[in-house]
Length: 267
Image (cartoon, rainbow, N blue to C red; front, side, top):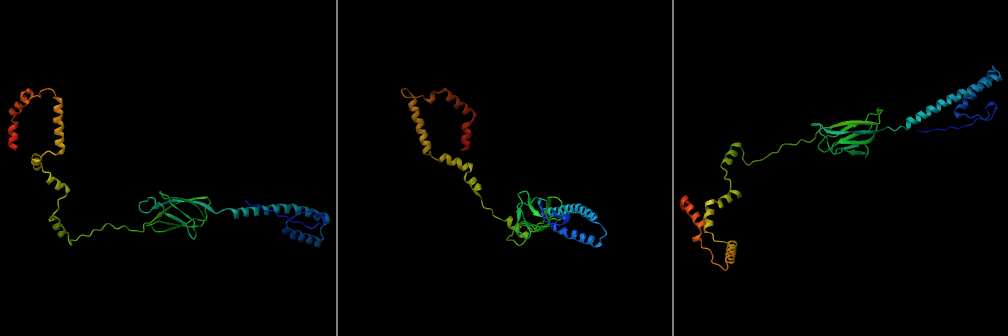
């Protein structure tokens, strides 16, 4: 809010001594005095009365002028700024467009939308706002200059500018029939799993296990077991399996069940 102060002075003459009025009102008083003096229809008391009445009217008129000037000053100082906010969305599915650029035309001021397509910045009434993003057509919007509120919201829709083509695969066969024939006659090579199955056939593994001698680990384990048995039976006669009744019972049970016959047939 602006404040204006006006000061001026009249010449010291007659009843106007020590009276202060704006310079702009001095011609009106001078004209009124000249008219009254030329007509000479009124007496000096009437002129003094008119002058006193004129002072009151001038005071009221001066107050009105000052009020008008103050109002005009407020209207001129009132900023035309507005808090411009909104969301930028896709025109096809109305999904937010993240990190879209928003610029004020012919200026270096602007902002960028966040991950959810939201933006908010200060602009002026009548500004042209440019919205743009990679893969979308540029859109312009003019902020109305008749807004009475300090906040203005907008949902800006952007149209897709880039068309994504489907994947195209190129084959060496000129027709689907030839592709079908080549596919049916295709000799698929064996993969690692198939080669492992062939190399690890069960029958071949049995023969290899039977013919394979003991390795270093098995020989070491056998020697350790033998040494442990010698220490266990040190100072006494080792047991003879021929006199073990449990071993005889297991042998007779296996013989009755025909385990030896089945093992012989498999060989």
